[in-house]
Image (cartoon, rainbow, N blue to C red; front, side, top):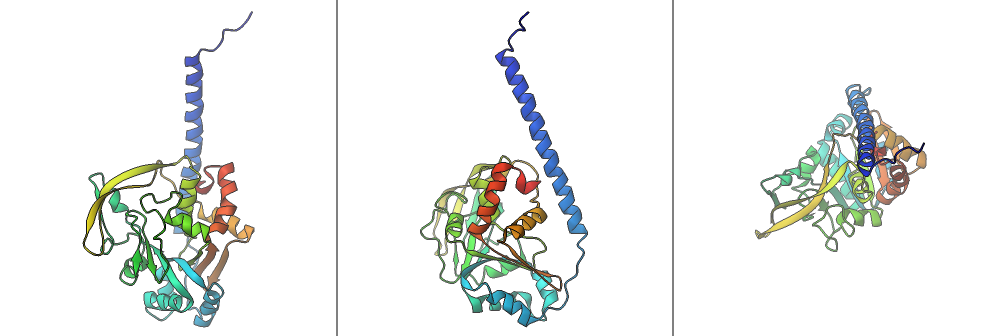
Length: 288
């Protein structure tokens, strides 16, 4: 006796059940990773002590280039050196790089009532270094959610600024030119370039969203804008320990522990080439 064919409605129910189970599985993986990373942060097993300035200078000297994109933790720098941490690091970077780049991210623009982005006065949300650097930078991109602050001649005038992670955008330029990144004093590996990878590879836990608002320029002019960027569709945390280990194993990440002061060095395109096949094989690779 032949079994009856499954109806299309039955097929759709099965597919929906499989999809729900798959999503539940991946959410469980990301939740486990969030808990693990939170526990590791609480168990930070090192303290920062005094660091030789000569040793630190030698490390910076080995990465001299036209431009550097920095992520900075001033608290640990203040513990390592007997100087004002911001002035100390900025001076060291000025001596070695023509241009210094730093994230000037302002997520407040994502307001449902419409955002306001002032290129001169909108204060970066993440990190004391960025908030101080706003007064010392000479250029800021027009991106109202993920702007880049620049001290020096490096420019993004040939890039689109209306879609943060799009082809032809500012972060694609960083990738194309394989810009040098440095983390100084960050407890974990940090890179805004990973957001670029998530968006370009269309990982399943982000979506592209449009925001309406107003941009105020340095000369006092303003205009309404529509901007596209990303939002996460689930609570997640990058598995920075795994990412660091895989990048080190591939030879594209240099890591230093200077009496507790962490320094990481890598280049934008180099990490993309290593991480892309891993993300394609497992779209949840970064967050599990």
